[in-house]
Length: 288
View 1 (cartoon, rainbow, N blue to C red):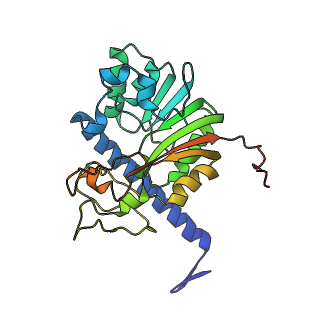
View 2 (cartoon, one colour):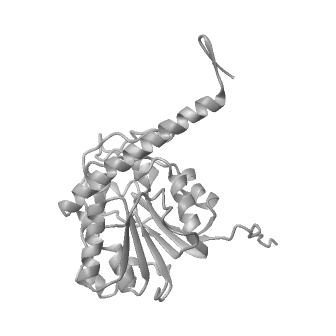
View 3 (spheres, one colour):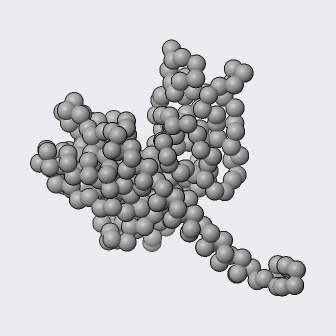
């Protein structure tokens, strides 16, 4: 029991209040990030540029350089989640997949529709937040592709729960995330080193930073711990099959640049996970 002066407040009341506050914060973040990405798309920022002719020459190799998806994705049902901008959806559709792209930004989705029309591709575009996919049916997709974007939602577990719901058993979930250690770390070096500025255990959005390669202009971002990212994927009903940290370090880069900073802290992590059936027994490994 919690005691306030002159009143007794039950734990359930505290919990409901916190849930209401988290929902309000989540809604505010969605609204701000939708406006931010609309603006980024309108000014053709780096992450809002459609795929190039060179990328379309071999679309599957472009989107899957590690070969996680196998030799062909023809006729597979692919969800490109939080992936508007005219690149991901068009390349997967060009590789033969049946593509649905979901994004919170109407302007980013406009680019998907534009590229699809120009290249005579079939792409279904839906405006929605990645943590609320009620318009999609259970087990609808064979593959879910999720570029860097979980940093824009307050509750990442809600995202993984929705991804699990719409992925068929045995289906793949390929996701990329901003590394929590990178989000903790200063963008520029001080006294010859990159210092940790943000606490690892924290609530609420990150402090605003100057727009750069790893912090997009006008967005509201959240730091999600490793247990929330990797543990969250597993708890949602996936098993992880592989994990890489895409290489961005550049030994010749000038001090303070993205390439130089990436020598000290990896900016991203890419994860390959597979959906398991709810009735599957735990895996048992033989030992000597």
